[in-house]
Image 1 (cartoon, protein in one colour):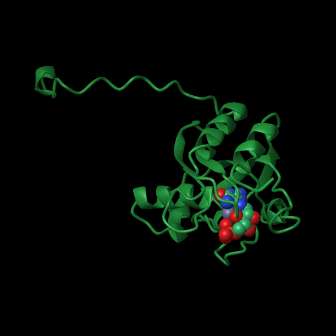
Image 2 (cartoon, protein in one colour; image 1 turned 60 degrees about the vertical axis):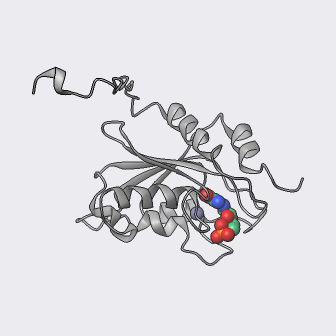
Length: 186
Ligand code: HJL
Ligand code: ZN
């Protein structure tokens, strides 16, 4: 197609600098940017999350607490948006995810929700591909969940029991907790 047939009013898309898949701090900072989009609410935390192709470093989707309708968590929004974009239900998202998917989340995924909704740990474990193993192989967390709402969250433990590695990316704790607890009574 000759170039002049393209709509002249569209600006060129600036090149996106690729992120090295080992640059965990950069991904965690992007997850924190997501958390800052979340509306403050006294009864939960403002969390941000990204799913990344661990082989290429490509960001597959992102999400934050209360982004989608209802009482939604960051990790849930991220998976649900990826599922919608690939025309499957969130339950089937594992069929669409790359084999080596990693999740970045500013806070350890939940294992118990006071609202009774399905915890994010279970959503992560059920991202099973054809081989029956979770497509999310690793979860990078910025902080452990504080004990305010559900006591000692067993999220990390349950992920590890299901063969999912959990890695704490250090250095963002103070900023993550400040963002997470904005709007809480001090
Ligand atoms: C994580 C989130 C979020 C929490 N944790 N990892 N991502 N909001 O997006 C954990 C907290 C629960 C409360 C209230 N927060 O959210 O323990 O109402 O938000 O189901 O247990 O439960 P609901
Ligand atoms: Zn959750």
